[in-house]
Length: 139
View 1 (cartoon, helix red, strand yellow):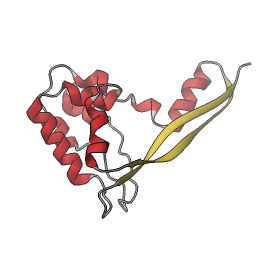
View 2 (cartoon, helix red, strand yellow; view 1 turned 180 degrees about the horizontal axis):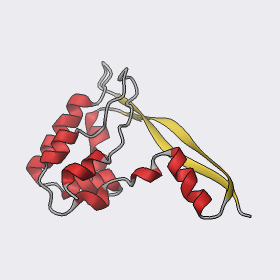
View 3 (tube, one colour; view 1 turned 90 degrees about the vertical axis):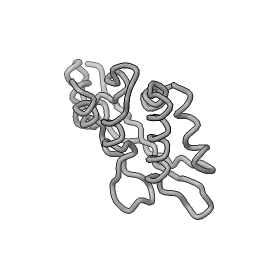
View 4 (cartoon, one colour; view 1 turned 120 degrees about the horizontal axis):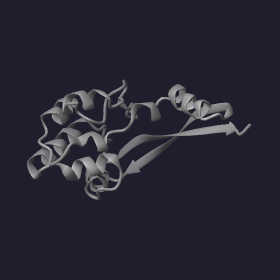
């Protein structure tokens, strides 16, 4: 599967304050990025970011009374550098992908994100972070 095909699997993440759904990843920049290795292992498996599919996985494992729901919190960053610095740590899918890029591609990604992330007048950034929780009963 190509980088472009993998990029299509990324789920759009609504950004707080944006007024409409945007994506945290610029798919054109992702498609154009030169990577050191196959980015597939850095991408989120789509079935783990959809509550219906996640619940189906637990049901298929034999669990009953399966309920999947989102846990959403606001995350606050003092400025863009505060937001960007975790991308350089390599921990987690997005940072692992960002650190696999060459310097020029990582700079392009950083600047595209800087242009797209909603920033308050004081330079701060507030985004919604979402995790999925599943509750089920073992038969």
